[in-house]
Length: 199
Image (tube, rainbow, N blue to C red; front, top):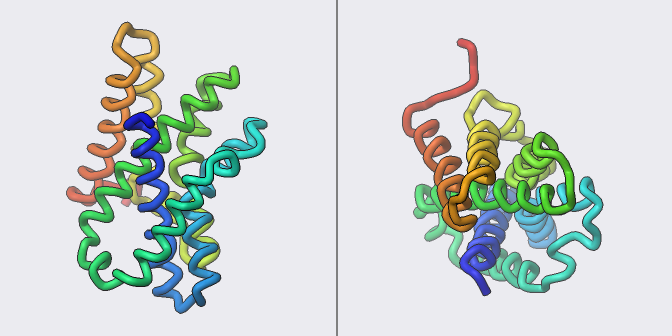
């Protein structure tokens, strides 16, 4: 069990919590909340795997992802108030998640022999499309379609990782720096109210 795998499961759980809380706020019943939590957590990775022809998709071959989502659902219902008070921490966890999922998605796509531009796109898909599905199902405008910097941060981190692939830097260090790039851009964008809007 590597640190990447542990972070992947943790990111899955945090994304699932995000989805469940959104569903609860929209007055979904428990079954609906479970569905929203699951698609938020694994929707992006599922779409990526289907598009690159890697089936069965990743979470179907490892029940730990199902367990992570189940734990997230339970925590969301039992500790909803406490989790909402940790909103800033949840933002931090979410930012770690998109950084991790971007690089993992990019790596997996390169691993099946697809081109770098496609891999960069699949990295973004891995990171953000679970949230897109969540927002569509809960009748909200998806975050990546707003002016807020989100997918752009993922793309920047992916480009940094591709650049490091041509260097002698240790792969784990390259991954860490690339993830940090996504996180820093996303954090600064929120803190300084950066956007892609032309206004």
